[in-house]
Image (cartoon, rainbow, N blue to C red):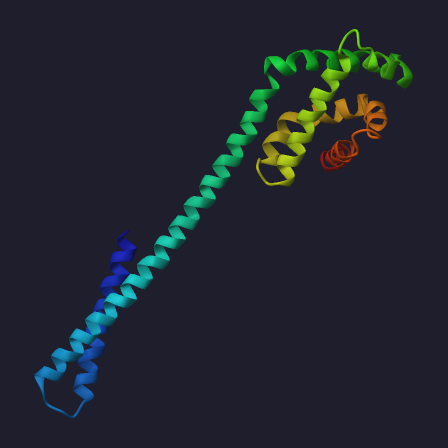
Length: 192
């Protein structure tokens, strides 16, 4: 605020000095003319001051908006980290972790048959997990989250799950083409 006041005072002083210089160069010898020039300078000072204050306020508002957007991106990122620990994802995470432990010992066909077995709802778990990943990908693409925060928290998990369930993603990709494409792009984005 002190910079604003200093600039406004300097502009006011310059306006009055400019009026005095114009008066001194003017050949008419009248204090009324000086008075008119000073009043005109003050009026000009008011206009210039208002314009400068508006520009400053707009810049401050813009900075505050950028800070608020960055803060909101961090908040959105933290919400994903919190959601990962939610009850709804817990069973799905348990199942995908179990598959990760056994993945080297089961074939692609066995995994697909296991997932599609309606008796255990495994496909629901896998869809839930990969919907979560797709939501994160779309949030990154739309600049709603801080990718670095999510990458630090989830990169290894996502790449492992993508690798473990890639056969299912390709099989399901026939049905859910957009989801499959998004998850593949996400894998490429975080693989590097």
